[in-house]
Amino acid sequence: MKNNQLRLRMNDERMDKLRLYARVKGKTMTQVIEELIDSLPEVVVKPTEQEEIFIK
Image (cartoon, rainbow, N blue to C red; front, side):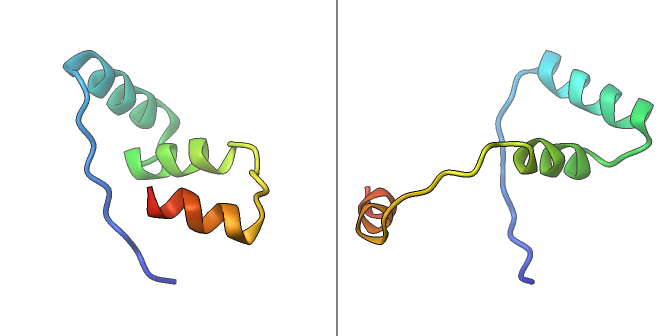
């Protein structure tokens, strides 16, 4: 699986909250974000709609 990079901008309060949460849970910030993304519900779209979404 290819690993991609994502660059985020966030204020200091959010960064501190993420950093503290990750440390308390014994995880990396990447792991915390990946788990949050994995918890999102699946979205089902038709192939033609998917093309349209990615083109915009």
